[in-house]
Length: 68
Image 1 (tube, rainbow, N blue to C red):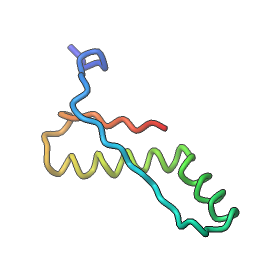
Image 2: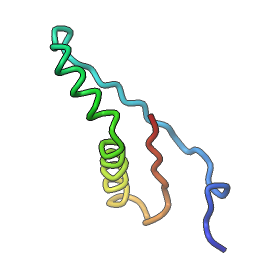
Image 3: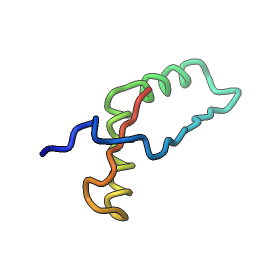
């Protein structure tokens, strides 16, 4: 029988805080916001976490979900 989201439970949650310098220009803040808010960025964060976990845990044992 295939594994479904209903077969999983939350094991842990990580919270990431992104800080910028107080004097960063408005345009730089807008650019950072666009990057961080993009689907590509979120996908890359998810892939990076999954890559680290895959080197240390059995394949498929942990599902990584990144949301904004």
